[in-house]
Amino acid sequence: MARLMIVDDDARVREIIRKYAVYEGYQVDEAENGAQAVELCRRDRYDAITLDVMMPEMDGFEALRQMRAFCSAPVILLSARCEELDRIHGFALGADDYVAKPFSPRELMMRIAAIRKRAERMPVTAPPEIFTLKGLIVDFTARKVSIDGARAELSPKEYDLLFYLVHNRNTALTRERLVGEVWGRDFAGDPRTLDTHVKLLRKSLGPYAHCIVTLRGVGYRFEA
Image (cartoon, helix red, strand yellow):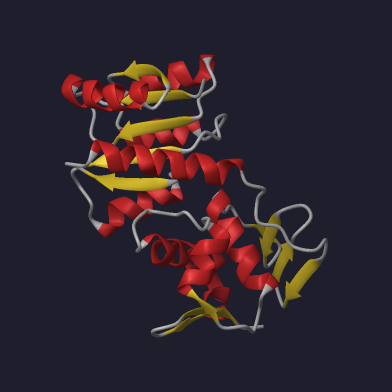
């Protein structure tokens, strides 16, 4: 039986999600703040986690930051705040999806199913090789990126996106193709997710951000 952890300081929200999750066959654990969530995550393994952002004691961002040190379970952030900076911060910390409150419980369950399916897929891969562009080194086999001699700290999804762009370098890639190959054909998340991750990736690449070219009305291209 798949296990879901629901983290929210609002008992009514936890009850609603639990009701739908149990109906879908999940075994459910609950936490009312980030500190409890981190402790539960240390003790048990979860197939997915819904994590409220605004909570007392420890908010969702800090909880996610601590969880990602030892937990790779898919995480959906829930928040009444959906400014771009909040979404970027959440994705940078390793969130898999970001859902605005109030939300549809049925849609939330569909999103959970979708990110679980993506997590079970084989990761985006490329032939065993090392791509070099001046001071930018992308090691496909070791899954490492170096910029001018320093190791670049990328989130898992930033790695997947960069590796796919580099592997298909100098090729115009449509938004649909990128989302389908990197997030999965069944992705039902925010359509701005791709743009948000491109923005994060460009920031991580620093002096090589210009290599990711925006093709208006089409998608993106990695120029080498």
